[in-house]
Image (tube, rainbow, N blue to C red):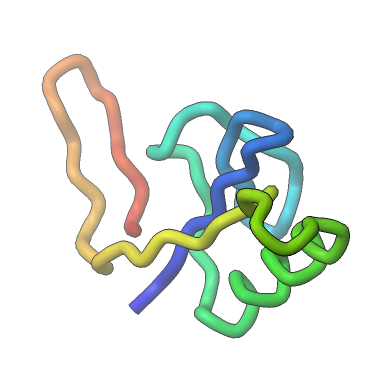
Length: 77
């Protein structure tokens, strides 16, 4: 299973190789659980008890790339 990471502060998903953010889930990078957890742990290190997290990981199923009408290609998630 792979994971994507959403940043509330940046209002977007982490891109592959931790190269910035995107508002589009289809452009989100996929990470192993340990890498996604590390990203969230660092992003949430200053969050106080009871406050919402700054970043959250989301489990996604791995599936082959899909081409939709209009040549939009969704990544392997």
